[in-house]
Amino acid sequence: MSSNETALSSDESLTSSNESTMSTIESRVSKKVRPTPAEQDEALANFISQSRVTLDTILATPEILTLLAPRGYDSAKLNVGLGLQSAAQSAFTVRQTAIGDETKANQTVTSARTAARIAYFDFRETVRAAYRGVSERQALGVVGTIPADTEKLLTLARSGYAAAGQAPYSTVLSGLGYNGAGLSAATATLNTLQSARSAQEAARSAAIAATTARNDAAKALREWMQALHRITKIALRTRPELLGRL
Image (tube, rainbow, N blue to C red; front, top):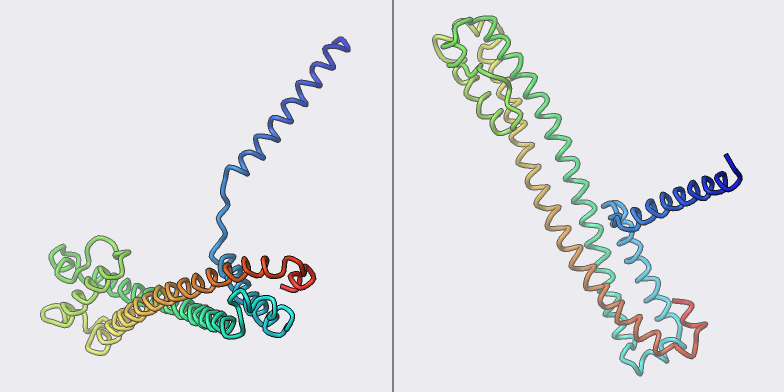
């Protein structure tokens, strides 16, 4: 290969590399990376905390107060901002607690569902061992597979346990562990799951309401602080050392 060909090959390689790099950069820029819920919560917590620092600094600095008061931001107006900050902080805390309660409720449902499915699986296997006929198995609800849907599981299992406690099935199944006590124990797993599901729905509703309240409180504080920052930049334009404290 001649020197010119070598140089051309090198230039083509470099061009290809640059194009690849630019393509990667453009791809990253074009993709809007959305912050995760945890990152959003952290950013909001930082904003609420910083708002309090800003307001406390202004109220504790007579020079800043003197310059802001003529523009409508005296101590009384700033205390309104403190009220909004306190409301946002409280709503943030309530929402965090609600999210924690929902997480616990979800975990409780998962555990209760597992216990109910195991109990129902054992019942179904017992029925299959006791009866080979399709009609008997259908009467006891032992057809197909265990439903993945929780509500369907509850309905099917309750129906099967109820049928197992009645003649003629009770005569056979009572001797295989599904007497009164056995059926009560199996049914108890369903009751526990149903109660857990109700608690889960309540926790979910509370979390949604708390999130809405937090967002509303944060929005009110953000709008108020944005207005304050605009006025502050005007009032302290000739005092950059004071503006730097904020």
